[in-house]
Length: 376
Image (cartoon, rainbow, N blue to C red; front, side, top):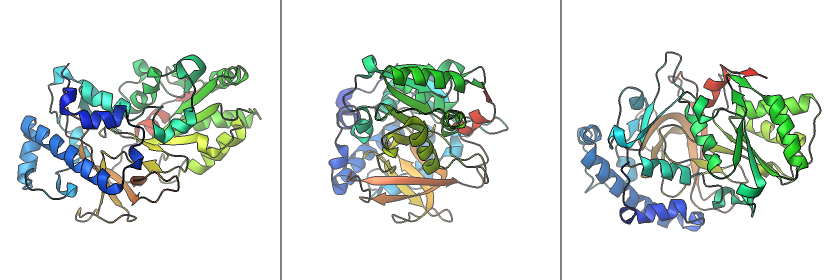
């Protein structure tokens, strides 16, 4: 497969794979970093992606004269449902798809090795943003992950399974969604044995399935005293429709009560979507931190003009980490950003996704799985 030479992208790769203190960079330095990385990425895609080049030319974008990252042409995520927007050759890539709509329409995103490795790097469990959960644990020796979702072999292309099972690279992982059945009783028994054996356990999966495990424990009055030996990591949609919603704070409270955790800080959520090539991980204050190589722009849905921090609008992303497709995205999510406002002290941007654009009728990957899953 085609891989971009490290010498061409050393600054970005050092950030993703080696540096754990990117949050310490002043916001001005983070902004300058994003400018450099984005200009390089834009030049790459403009040169090698004719479709993106035509789009950029149609809106009058000039990579030599643009003054603000909000001017970088951003592709609506719906485009990925209608065409293959590839910068690399298909033979050099793996295809990832979203869960799609009820009519079967799915986003199709092509990732080469460099792009996929960087996505994995943004989820490093030894990184600072959630390194406090894992401390000095040797995950290969002392850790286990109970994944309340399918293996990649059974995922049928559902994107969330790829994100959540990347932790297999770091620790032994068992999947409890098999043949359309969520085996909560088996997960509960394996959890009991692991805690009794003083193992370090990560319970991972879509919120709806993690909640099923915790409710199973609660309904049967099963209680643990896990202390700091269990963490809960969720990723995916929190709401099935306008009337059905899993409340993140309630899920954290349920986890603390049933598992006997020391603190709700041990329950974290990860934000990602198939088109975005970087994961945003919650800190101990449950704010989702944006790594400094990604620019998040909140836009007015009426005219797409950028909005200030604190205002709610359409979330859009400029992510230079993808080499195989232009990861410059206008999403279907409403949300807001803040800068240097998190009590944890990490500098930079935090993002709060709030709801989907009403015209976006498809469910996210986690909720798509939930509609076809039985309990066992």
